[in-house]
Image 1 (cartoon, rainbow, N blue to C red):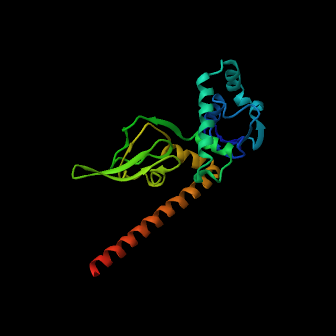
Image 2 (cartoon, one colour):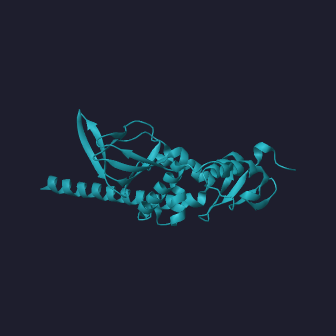
Image 3 (cartoon, rainbow, N blue to C red):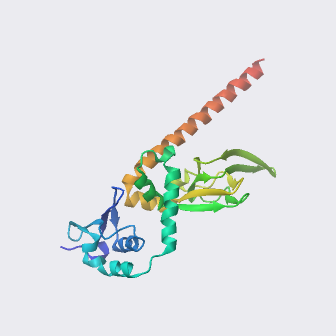
Length: 239
């Protein structure tokens, strides 16, 4: 029995050698429109249980015809060039060591490049954590307001990240975040990361592993500082 139209799903073999899916026909046509899927891309349909080139699938013919007929969008070209620039920055980070350059570029499609002017706040304490930030250029300050005075917790520079717990629990922000200078961020929204987990777990897994290791390293350092402070004050009291 053929699947109902609403139940039809597809898998796409990406140029980054990652299989994406299951995804809907609407998603496939959307990716065709932005040239994330090309006519030569291999696509599997659960309706017929076969792999075919996108250009050979009848249900994609109209979309391909419109895509080929339209003038090239310069903004799309600029977006691809921007993603390549971001890829060059990200491939030096530990979080992306487990991904190839092509996979990092694919990962970047699930994120947003955000440019923030000096002193602007990007997150407020108590707000729902809806994204993680990776600093590409500039500096972000995490701080708390205590009795009307600012207490700086940390300053994070290029290659470092903040808000990583938001990808997991979407809990409230534990501090305010603002930029000290003009800053460029890679913002990973929790909703988009959930799509990545569903569509390409093989792409998300090495990133999550590296992220977990980084979080654990931070916890170990915090624990060590807490232990050192206890020893310090213990010696002060005893003396």
